Image (cartoon, rainbow over all chains, first blue to last red; front, side, top):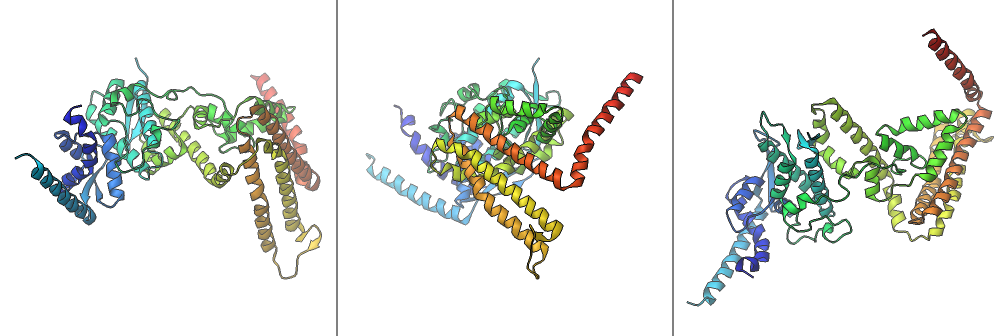
Length: 108
Length: 387
């Protein structure tokens, strides 16, 4: 098993965190998120992203507004709610503490 | 040369090759099945459809108006299978009986292996959703893709000719199987989409855009389907609580034998109610017994309607429970069902008889039917001979 396979579950679990990070940076619609993810280890397909976005919206982390697109159906542009920002802050904090632990334990 | 099917995604019409349409449909069905029980199901499905619309649009240009099968498969492979978000209950489709093919495999495999139900041909079934008596007419209407009322009228008219319609009806009620599983119901109309699916699409402005379909044939076809599905849905909605009771009520299959008895009771109540209603309206008294002085007739009628509803509600539910108890015992079902149909026809006959005897207008109307029919036959004959 390669490192890549070992981290499959962890990447999956971290996806929500990554999506929060992307949406925090700017208002985006789903295709933008997928494009940004595709350049990272978190490359994802619509089939996974849409259910995740809907879940996050239901949990009050995100909100969206409709915007007309020049071609095709209108798009949902997502942004974080106050609760989403709070969640992102907490997750970042936790992530940093994890990172700190790894660094502390790593052989110097 | 390939057949092209016009579909509507996100409010725009797209033309797909037939193979591509089948692939797309099976993808959406799999997605819908996997999201069963997910509170965001409708939203996710709409999002998916709209994302597909964008991708298709990118493929088309002024000289390319049809999305070919290969392109549909590529788009779906790119979208990937629907997966529940982490932390959510596992999606039902993964272990259930209706498990989609391909499972969690990569996109392309899924796109290629359409479920066996995908392009199922139409079959003639009795369709109970929206049925009046046994679903023969309803099933036939779905099969022929016409309005069930027309089919019913056809049967009634045929009955006027030496009872042919009645005979055909009874034979069909026995011979034609009833659509029970969702797959069978789908095969009855040759259309796999469930009513809920159509409601969801209707909400998404789906049918508004049908008006923009380029060819009239497709437009008519979709409108017709929409109407039919709305009818079936409203029927199902009205009968949902009965269905709930039927599902949560342990029944012995033998109870099915009670069905004609409940029907008889129901019919009796109906006849009595109609008689009482007529008696009220005609004489202002209930079978000779006058109303109290200060009660207006309309209040009495209202009370009568409420009483009728309360009496028939448990009877309807009981009938539903009985037919639910039949389960797989099909030979028994036919017999019980035939008896049930006979009971109902009897009720209708009694009502006609009562009307015939107590209302001179009805009697005159019925007696006039042969004369009018003869007249019509004569007229047509003279017209034909003149030609």
